[in-house]
Length: 287
Length: 141
Image 1: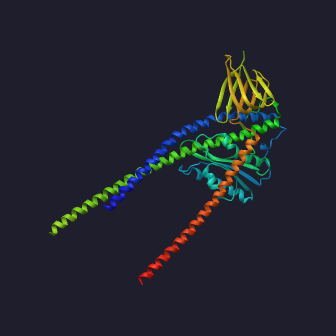
Image 2: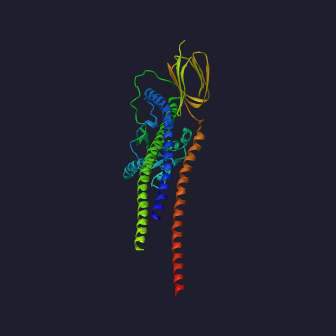
Image 3: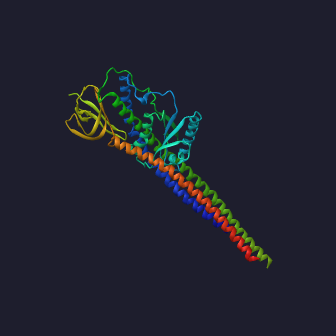
């Protein structure tokens, strides 16, 4: 019966694992909803901001903010990488990093230096080992990220851009498509690509207090911050969705494994009984 | 009596949306009272109160920690900051982010040292085992 007992302990351990994965699955399922609400709540800000930028840019064609001007020569690029703090969320981070690495290699082949700012524990742990300039990091944002917590990480890159140490800035995160799909996404933050959704037909100009350059500077900085903040929220929703799916499949696998092990256990038990009987019968016959 | 639409949003959530007879806010260059059909204006806000007088004469007080006020003839948009912002405060946050990065890299050194120490430990353990075995063989003879 030694084999049978081993199998029984194995079944027990798989059952315990299943309890954990089930619990994680349910926790994530409830957190997705909250993350999505946060995502929705942050949208009007970015939309209104885009409007303001459109208006100001239209009205002041003579003033070109550095954030809007494409630079001819690119010798440095920056990445703001949004990842999760915790693991157990399937290939979410790995997929993003793989895409990023391919992209970075292309830059490095062109002798372009790469600077990174990492948001989230996973990206921090990953990119500090690579041959890139690791300039900033923010971790442990929690379930309700605050814009406040991101300011430093973003400003590092914006300052570099203003001083000409970075010529292009990208934002990388997982876009939340739906619960089953999260898309690794890379978008250009700086220089800001011209948006097409801005209506161009309005004939008036603002009164500026103080001047247009100061306002533009302020608005653009806030806009970039809101973009990064939204990316963090998208990534948060993606994290919970990915974790829920990963944990669901883990629970399913555990259930399947328990079934198979039970079968093996029953066979082993039966074989032991059969053997015992045949031994007794054999013994009786010998007498 | 005409009214003006007011949108107050922050990066984290929508704060207020509705009609108003008058909006009073503290701009960078001074107090502003915005009535319907105000000329288009854009300004930065100082941290302080925003007063919205609603059509039923009810007053609504909002606290903003800075932000941007945009006025179009029929719409007032206030994009508020979620936190008090100042250049030196932001600077401190930059330092924090940089330090976090440096710490992460420093930790990696620790990890390397741990790995090296572990390798050394494994080698020493192997030597010890070998010595032990030799001693036992010596006893047998």
